[in-house]
Amino acid sequence: MIYKKMSHRLSITVLRSMIFLVTLFPTVLSAQTDLDTVELKKSQSINRNFPLAYPVDIQYTYYTPTKMTTKLLGKDYLSADIKNQQTLTASANALLFMKKGFLIVNSFQYQHGSMDFQNIDSALYNPLSSYISRAEKSNVYSNAVNFIYMGKLFGRKLTCDLITTIDFSEHGYERTIGKLVASINIKENKRTSISVGLIGSTDPTATIPVTPQISITSWIGSKWLLDAYMPAYVYIRRIYDNNSRLSFGMNMLNGAQAYVHPDIPTVSSFTFQRGRVEFASTYQKVLFGGFTLSTKVGYVINMEGKVLETDKSNPIVKLQQKPNLSFNIGLSYNFIPKKYRQKSN
Image 1: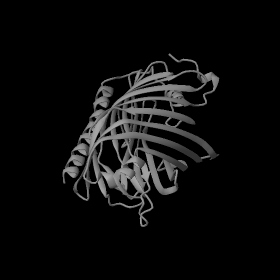
Image 2 (image 1 turned 180 degrees about the vertical axis):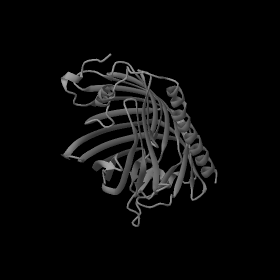
Image 3 (image 1 turned 90 degrees about the vertical axis):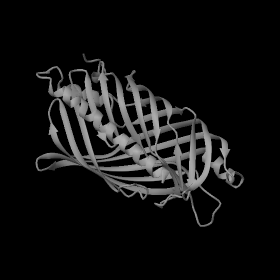
């Protein structure tokens, strides 16, 4: 019951924060007129320099020490300190097929996670020690195939993305998840783009199988940009020269953190699932030849975590982790034609 109340309060806090960030800046925007300095080609240039998915991307994140408590089937189970928590993520995206209005994109991601559990307090520690040591390091390989359709519905732009994701670990195949993202553009001009849609998932751990989605990109003056894709992220971006930008806002991260294989004949593996809400400041700079350096500092609110049998929906263990700080550095590569690499004032 305690975990359910904490999760509910966090969800309400996150929702209110997103609504505040989205509603604050259109108020400023409505008071401005005749801002012709921002052109559509500038938006296209920034999108080209800072795409949502890079062909190659490497990210390293360090998290400050924190504490966690767990419950097993609703009863107090284990508490511990988490130290030396780090994540290394490498991803690659490749266009496999392109025809008018239809794309197939393959996305591969490798994630290595490590942490140290210290000051463990549990009467069951000895029989659990082997499982804890296995959970301290994880390797997850994910391959997603995106089938993307772009057309029109009622004269408005329609985008549908059918995604099939397969997860692997060092033990082999783990699970397959399907997702469908459909959105329709309801406003489009030189300054603002707004689309709404739905996200459906076959993930059995999802609280709601179908969630609403809204995307807003809107210029505020000639240097500030509101960039929101809810429920994933909301950012206010300060554009300096089309080759660098500073972003303030929040993002939500979800997914399998690790797969643990127990010595239980009836259970193939357990999945450690956790969501994070991160309030962060990010700086990105295009260096040379399409390489981009990024740094980020964030305050992380860890949502309720779950340990459950893979492809099952009922958690066996629930865990709550106190907030901590994150420090990230990344290097990405994106092919940018030479004529687009010069700075634009």
